[in-house]
Image (cartoon, rainbow, N blue to C red):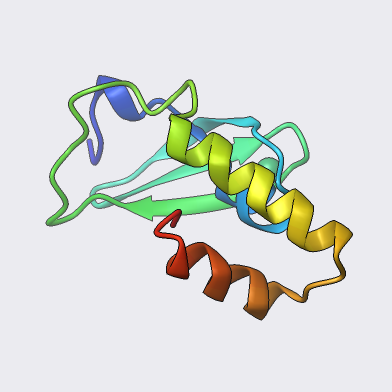
Length: 96
Ligand SMILES: [Zn+2]
């Protein structure tokens, strides 16, 4: 088991950082170090928990920071920003 009970469902990082939408991604496969997640849009993401402190609260629902990140991404997409600029903006605002 890589994660814990708090890591069964996460906010899909692809939906959040590429589309600006908050979607749950459910664990579909559990590894030794990496757990795999899939959302309803079929984005698949692996998260490596090895060496990471495991979360003390469930990773779903989204945090206020993730909600703000989603708003930022939607606004940036509407403004025509590319993905690199969006990621840089998220980092600058400490939303990622
Ligand atoms: Zn997704």
